[in-house]
Image (spheres, rainbow, N blue to C red):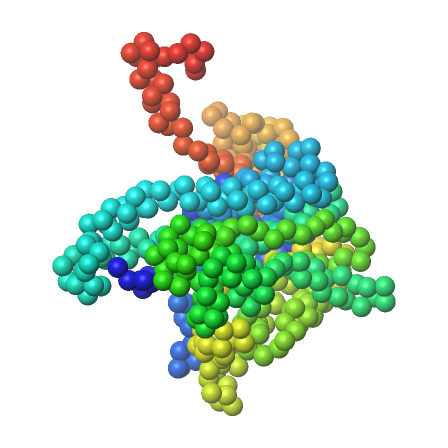
Length: 489
């Protein structure tokens, strides 16, 4: 078997409804994003793979907010899994009774470890299949001989290796009791922008970059028995650059199969997060920025700046002044970085190669970028005020078409949604706040769709666990008369 097989990239699935979509969104934050790009000779761009970044920004109550960004690699499966599981591990009863900084930091630490354990358990079937394939291919065969004799087994093994190498880095920010807590693995970054006593905006990085430029991480790897010179030369740990992540079995449970990692006494890549907090959110705190590494690395590679955090904060300040919503602020920063990166790469004054200051490798592409901005004490001068719209009145329509009674929305039949008109089983209602002018037919139709979209009953939250097999077994036991006492539904 090869020491490090070519790892195929696993494409992430199309968007699916997630239970986290029904969590209440935090209106004090906004998210901007851009998919990865390959630069072509004609100046156009194309995606190398579907976006692997995922994020959420939710408000639980006036005292608790949760934000997160997950930057997947080798596919989006691990990032999707972590997004849903992380919210559960932190929010559902885990913070009850926790008040001290250490208690809340421990909740965040345990949440990361629980997500890691759950994800690894979810790939057990693929691990079993992989182990069987490895047993079916004789060890004494070279890679070429194995493929020539067992092509279908080798192809399937490579596919499984691609799926099992899927992982994600993550940064999570929790606002609880007026304090800020940040936890991260990998290179997703958290920046807190606040003013000092002189009113000057300062940038504080609250996350730790877990990569091979981090001296503490290199020391940890050295203590595990790894050859640092070789690691530094290749600038990778197996198939990834990060020294910490969620998921990616190949550099964890399977690290003994990778030649440069085989000498480690234990798993070299870990899921243990760095946790900081609680930072009091006083009047000097202006805004928080969470980002995937594609944001600051793209800016670094295009501008060669060694103060990328400061530049990002300055960009955000400019967008705060120019934009009217928080989402526009975040998207404005992302768009500026994307334009700078593209223009620098395509400039005739350069060699059309961008060199990463971290790895020294040339890149004719840009990674996914996701930026989340949470506002604390920072004004948006051009903020858009909510557009007031008239709540319609409805009249009950008699069988002959004439109006018989006027009602307001609170008096409508249970289960009705607000539209231009609707019917119950035996009665019809009509919106009297709209004109019957034929010239407004198109506008009225679009307004009705808008109104319905706002006031329609939200979609139910899909079950997090499928109990259908349990119910089937209960019914089977009931029919056979073996159902234990106390189970009656």
